[in-house]
Length: 102
Image (cartoon, rainbow, N blue to C red; front, side, top):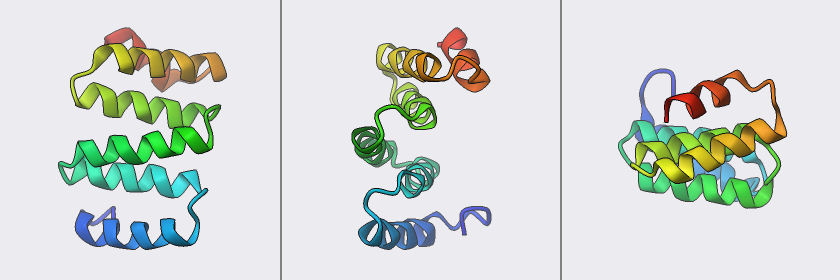
């Protein structure tokens, strides 16, 4: 559904999946992506903040949190999240590139 751009259907599906597996950060990441692509960045941030609470040391979660903060026009928070992703995984190229461009 996400690949076909059916974001509303994807969101509904992922919300149900999240009810069934609330600690699954991959679901959080996909749901945040769907919200962001659907123009609902505030909801994407909320979902990613939940994911950070569940897995605070996951570089992928921190990087995506940075992307969401950057989208909402908060460069300081974005930089902090990109930097945290790099602390956790110094080889994370996307985080390094994002940090350099904020």
